[in-house]
Image (cartoon, rainbow, N blue to C red; front, side, top):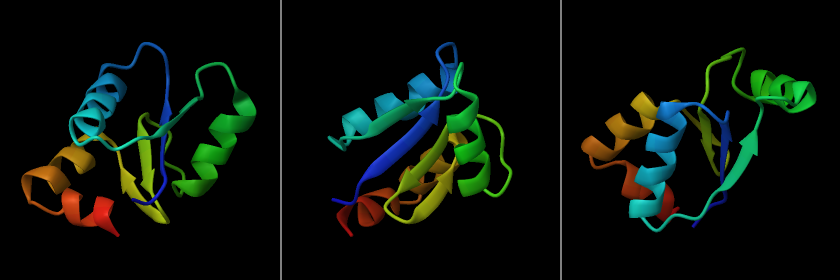
Length: 85
């Protein structure tokens, strides 16, 4: 399974939903809280081509996007394939 990184903030409901979906898939991830860390937020902005909302999810080298994007991949049956690469 490729490494998964998820940029989050503490009070974000979409972040909690994304983490719950990944946990249901038994997909371990590294959570990066950008709520009070400007350097990590800048890192997220750079990696996500300027997207500033959280969560921002990366699976391996693939920028998935936010929770809606992750959920759409799952509903389309493509998330499992991405997790298996």
